[in-house]
Length: 406
Ligand SMILES: Nc1ncnc2c1ncn2[C@@H]1O[C@H](COP(=O)(O)OP(=O)(O)O)[C@@H](O)[C@H]1O
Ligand SMILES: [Mg+2]
Image (cartoon, rainbow, N blue to C red):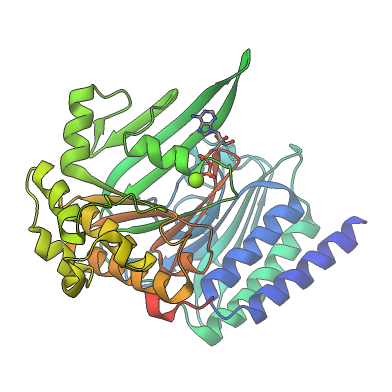
């Protein structure tokens, strides 16, 4: 395909995305994905300018570092200058362009050179900008490529105008867990395979983070490392600011006992104990548990508390598994494909339980799933691609479990 055809095709796909998808954040994210793919970029960001605070924050970004927590003042840096002036920028060497004071990517250890940044204008105001960074072939962006970005921004503005865009940031985000350049290698014959290739990710307190990605991309490995069930090869893991990259077995035991809960696709209940006894068993090992009755009540199984697992449906058994995870009052729960074995209705019941504990108990939940519909419930969605963070999306208006359809 010639360049013109390629770009025309991308414009058309973007138009389809923006006009046909009913959820704005997905339409914007999908459009950015098309542009990043078509132009062959290393990274791309959609920045939103909050009119209340006058600051820009990323609502969707594609690229290897987690910049979700960065916010910049309107008028500062390339991004801020574009939103404050309402004028596009096409830069050959962003970091040393004398018209701007650098770019946020300098902070993430990612060198931005070639860059496009175009404002997102609705009818009245600039509401953010779209930014593309570095061509993978090392070349510079062209005027033609700038124009396709401007076209996307114009289309996006129409859709945003129609659907309305407001971001509820819910106050300051507090970082709970940080991964910096985390790698994991496994021996394979005479050599090694690198399964995680430098993961950079922050997890915030009380967020619902969904992890998506193709089978085998490293999701479970990543979550198992954070949960102390596997160890990293290189890089750094910080828990509440404390280095936890190579914990002692004592630290690990304390961390597991007091801090986290795990829920898996298989329920792993003990068959000869009742629902409540399964939960009680874990409560007895914990430091400051709630009562088993309370945990059972939280998952809505009070009337089935005395049943053995074999007498419960799959969804009920999974709810017992969740009760077992929450009885310790963990700060964070990792759920690896918790609904993979369940039908639609039962999945919604189980997801509602997670929804409730996030809201009522302030628990942080990190959930791995194959189901993109579940991602609509999340505060943020991270896509893992071949052992790295591929993209991170912030949902402006997460859906409730009962609103999901598949
Ligand atoms: N203990 C292990 N030894 C060797 N290879 C492993 C081990 N654990 C996982 N892997 C490999 O790492 C890759 C990622 O696995 P995993 O994290 O389970 O992927 P996902 O959860 O995204 O499907 C797979 O290719 C898998 O075979
Ligand atoms: Mg897995």
